[in-house]
Image (cartoon, rainbow, N blue to C red):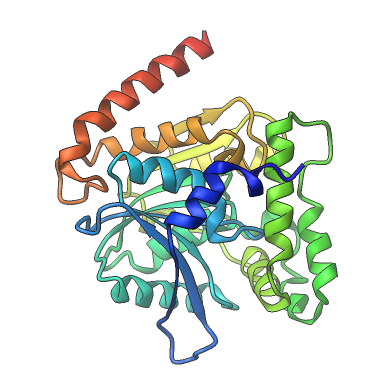
Length: 308
């Protein structure tokens, strides 16, 4: 167990991609942690936003693969923010600090919800060029926790962890998925009480996405057919909200497909980003485009053979 943490890929990632810490708020305790890999000349990178239990390194397989293909990718870890407006304001300041006018966002679960809220928040002066929403949702009421959202800050760490772990798969899973769950439990253990309490608050605070504010943004909805924390109703709601969105379905992957089905996730990310190649919003170095497109073609053939 715990294979990912000792895997050569993870160790290579930790030894080659530095973790940066950035403060953009007046409050010095609000520290953004991030990994930034790939060509720095790219001004519209892909930014990964983690779920409640995740740290920036849960996307290490996407960072290694996509930066190797010439994409600029950034994976974030949030500071402690207690409401969506505060988060959006902090994230905007971070993008200003990184001198990024527009970005593509990949959000997993809570990360996907925050990505939508940020796109909504900046709709008058758009900062989000496209969205990839993985196992995500558009309305926090699906968790039936809006009434407890304001009391998470009072709860001890062990109780908060118990709430989060309750959404992890408990049934039989394949060894790769078991390793992904172990890794996420380990990441969860690394989070402090205020980090966890604030994320759960953002996850459950009464809020929903206003689709008319972000209807012009290209969206890919990525979800799994096997068991995940997301209900079928929540998935259907997302499809209704984004009727023209591309859909990236994975047969299996549970709550954390970016860890246990990384090759498929990486391929779907490339397919999503392909539509921006040759524009100023490309997330890839132009000199690497042909190699990346070949990779997508080969991967797509593999996917279609698997589906047959």
